[in-house]
Image (cartoon, rainbow, N blue to C red; front, side, top):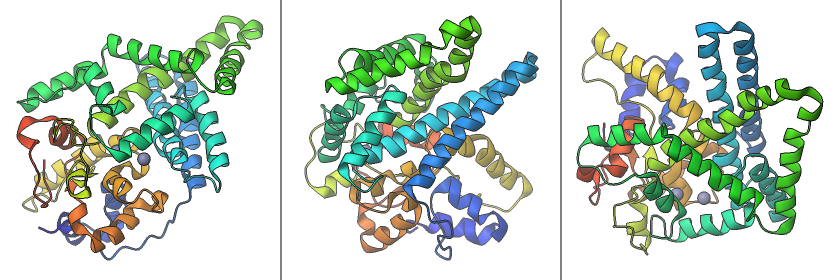
Length: 370
Ligand SMILES: [Zn+2]
Ligand SMILES: [Zn+2]
């Protein structure tokens, strides 16, 4: 099968009406599809802000409804706020580090400092230094993501059941969340540099809590449920699942890999979609749709957001038109197909791809399935 054969098969076997949806969840357009919704960085910012705003509306309803319906509504709002903050982090802050959101480096830095302050992320200067190091030698011992995963307890697993259980336990571990949040607080309120960035954090912190002097505990309760819980627990779960599936971290034993042939093997496209079933029976397709709606859509909304599906493209061509990466990748892939690979099957397949012993070998270039 060539790289996009799985997508072509879905194109042939599913109605035209749903092809836009399949392209969105998979991040892989079919050959016949054109990019009819060209995006700009401002659109991406708008989607992130809209996701947060929608989350606030759901949380507001949850507070009024109460009961089990209210809890379900709160979880939905929590996911939307967390997903929106992740979009602003992993799409916008990340691209400001590459100066690819606004026209000038200074404008990108200002936006990056502002957003890293609001979202309690590593300040721009240090963040950029760490991230450009990741691009030079991804997955080596000094890669902050490798250090993060090791500290969280992620390691190569021999059995997929052990891997899934480990990931599940870490994602819900109070120790993981407290340590992560503590590190974010320290990075923003104690060690942040330059000093103007430290001052920004303190002004932001004061602005967040100052209304409590007037509105008392009702304001603090709202602050916790609308903002602090999604920004800590939700953001961190999303960040963890995102990072655990981002690269084939352990492929070369965390050595510094030089040369694009080896380095390209560390990245792949995280396709949040299942391949077409073998047969056309109703039960086979019902299973495909259930996975699409219950696993792949949530993954695309809250974890593998925007162009993070095409992370192989980001490493091959960080200067590409990133908001339109799905279509950009088709162009680059047609020129140098040996530099790209796809893993279909969604998050469980991606967890196995990155962290299961049997998957960690030099990959051939055929697409891999769940
Ligand atoms: Zn990057
Ligand atoms: Zn990367």
